Image (cartoon, rainbow, N blue to C red; front, top):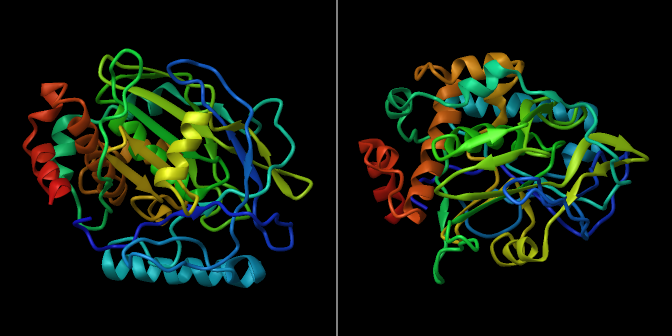
Length: 342
């Protein structure tokens, strides 16, 4: 990776959790994207451990003090994060992702979600001039290149973009904005819903959208999404929404061995494991307020969301054969492609 800042993320592990530790239970089904079918599948547990060893620029998991000392720990973590962001402009190296935990009861629907307003949907299509003005800020973490193999394509030959997350996860809440902005340059979403991250987790109630139940149409790429769990606890566990298909599980086993969410696979050529920026930048904002700032390149929201969207866009362009040309020929996207190849 050519940027050295840490990526916020969450992680899956094998330990079942309880309300006392404030760990969350989740599983996943394939979201109703292009082929529209949900599937029941196995569960994955969220690790309660701290950051693991490995590449120093990649955050692996949350520190257990966040769950053992919930009232005090959350306050301290929020203060530390705000100080770090103010000082460096980038995400704190303290938290970056969530772990999926033992499955809760299956949800019969997706509770605590609303129809995403037409205003918010419209503002996800950020003008190219704004995106070019934002560029690729140093505070945003680039997708990671993965070696070997050919581009993952569907039966029609289109590159496949895979997202795995959960509605309770604040890091997923942040990353969905960037992914939706990026994908809006290649196709059209329908039936997106509005939701928020868990009210009892770090960065509580981060406002966002959900891919669960949505569809995506594009002549360039296929998008498949997995929202593993709701943001609602029942009996000490988040309710299950979706589980990965066998093919998606293989992707996770290959490229997401530490179980981080959010996870994005871009044609098996680039992956995003954890949020590209800190959810703190969205704190206290409504979905309408977040969306309205996407067109202001000087706003912290646009710097984070649009900047991450540009990086994801460049990674997608690299697997579409520089299509569409109206996106690929942007000097901003071309500059990011050089960073990705570095």
